[in-house]
Image (cartoon, rainbow, N blue to C red; front, side, top):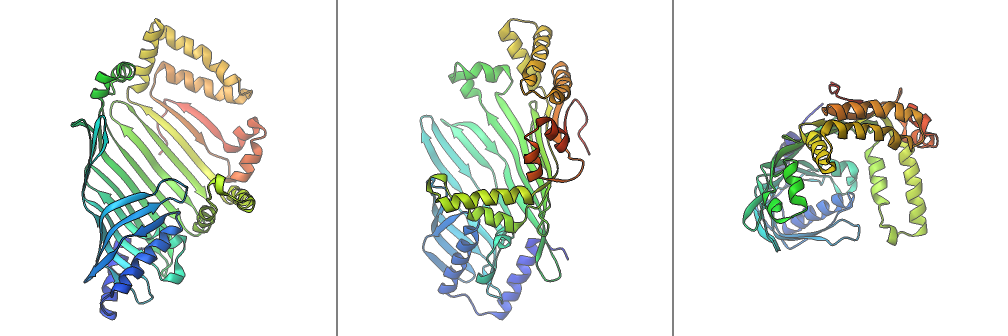
Length: 407
């Protein structure tokens, strides 16, 4: 049985409004306490300001968020508004949305930096009963996170803008209403950067930016992923950075064994090294071994598709060397075997050199992929690393250039 978070959240909220009395101030605090407990599992230390309740809306006077890594906590000095809050029959909570007032602030003085970010919202919030707070509860706590346009200016001039940031989760449940799968998308659209001010001001970086045609940058970032809770099967179909007239980088992966229970165990052991006790260090080492044993690699790849950047880099370095481009490329091709040979693995040289040479001759695409003949645990692969030639065979390493992307 498959349902989206939005459907589930709205159904629970509607049902709860029929069977419970209106929330009290104590229940408002209980809602915030539950939110704090859930996100504690993700390594977040959240402290909310004073809360007020009106109908099904909880308004909170700011918050402080720590990452538990010793870094300076992040303070939110503005109201946070939870709307459509309701308590469920089993003692959990739902909320239709969390909204944050638009941000419009200066963050630097020389040069003057100004940040604007609007329409910030988290939607379809689900919090479990107190006794069911676990990693799965954290994973299904929010259906979507969205913002409107983000703008950064530098001394009043446009520097960076983003049209929208959107992250959506779709959840699937079994007949017992237990989470089975998550399908996620993440998009940063309409990225635009104007580096012309840096070109004019920086005598070192400016000429490089201009030579590479990077004064104006535009592009998008997108990711799609599925994750099965039972066996920890995670498939990253795409994690793409795509910029016009520059190029794109795409990462894909297919692994199993990355279960919520394993993630929760690793998060619990995430203690800064300088604060870790001997027992915690030993526990971290054991957890690392468990991670290597638990996770199985089916495939992974990193692919670059050129849209002029590589050619411009070659032209720039050729110009700096005083050699014609063709002569400069031949010099690079002569160096590649020597560089790769330093690893001391002839099989790697035979694989890498033809691909790199083909890319230098005609920069179109370059891809590094690992595809074991059969899914293999990271522990086995780490053991194979003692013999680099054996590792190449074990992971099914492949380096290709100027070939179409796999479907």
